Image 1 (cartoon, rainbow, N blue to C red):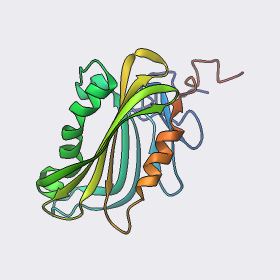
Image 2 (image 1 turned 45 degrees about the horizontal axis):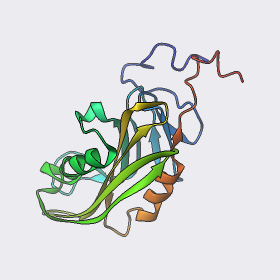
Image 3 (image 1 turned 90 degrees about the vertical axis):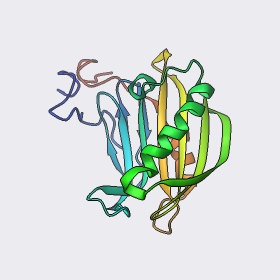
Image 4 (image 1 turned 30 degrees about the horizontal axis):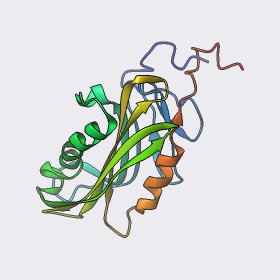
Length: 198
């Protein structure tokens, strides 16, 4: 097996998935399950799940998705908060702006917090903040910032940012909860374990 040997797996840093059916974020040490009909992307830093690509409603040439879930170590988002709760509360506004602000959807006109609670992810005690956002153009949406200690390194916080459109073609929020439940510690990268032999 040669995946994971050279560190970046190619020019765009995309690695072959280390486990079928999962998108792996090697830096964060986690794997996220890829639901049917979603695309999963594994990388040395960060992993992503997306579904329902369509042109952004803001009229730009950008592509938007009906549902997107992206992970990265907190440091990649320049988040320096000490606890998962502090980090999630700090990240949610940036996540909302990134997911639904700017030229993709116009400005966010208002938001409502619909969840702020402790949650266990991959055996770690984390914290999730979920907002419902109202946008100027196109669909309103749900955004969530979920933060928890990496199962691979207790000193590192992992951030999972989610954005779901409120639209009949968008995935239901229950899918987000299912994915959150299915996040687990990543298997070691192929190559690091002698080709993955047990």
